[in-house]
Image 1 (spheres, rainbow, N blue to C red):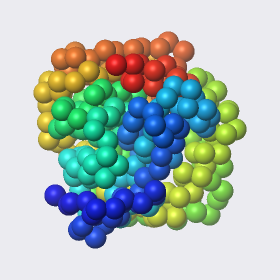
Image 2: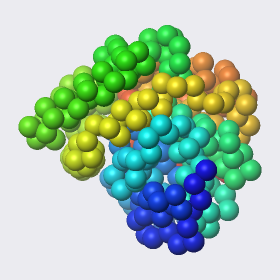
Image 3: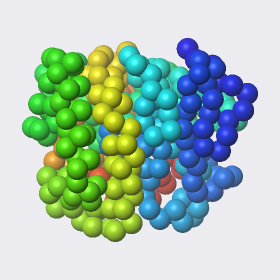
Length: 295
């Protein structure tokens, strides 16, 4: 496991194995710390565009780039636990004695892994529409058909999947990031389209996507390869409180996954919202954070 050097800067932490870990902090610097794990198409800046909400709730939000994303050095062959260990080292550099964790979509498995691995330090965990385990067919079937087939392709032939993603990034680079975000919105539910109609959020997602495609396709393939492997723990082994948030209008991943997770995690609470979609992280931002830091 890599060890963290003595000093972490405001934007990057230097790991003693030579890698760098990109991160950013928002909200109340003296508030309750919350480390957030971004989605597949995200980075360290994922949050609601109105930072006054963080200040009002007294939250110190810490977003972290996973290896290969944004300002973080790539780590070939990384596992869920490798990422969690990096984040725990960052928490020590930032002198966080206890903190909550938040995971959105593809960031959900990392948040759950962190809850499992460090119950003495993590006070509470919230996951919003998290990906299910993808080491069996049921997990793929719970996803939107396009993404289910995409992830299955990666599990069956990673080399071909890597070539496919290189071609996709090359093609996407020929057009504006706005076009990609609009096309993505067209495949989502009305609830999610409404969320993306917030111009500040739309611009934030565009900027994130621009950074991702500048980094190339390999970090995305690394991420998918990590998520389709066994997680390394059982949901039944998580002991801290876990809030599971799901929108019933989620077209990306079936809410049935949330019900199954809530049935497996001993101290889990499922919150199903009828009028919410996959992007309920943003539409329910205040409620999610309030519940996360309430204790």
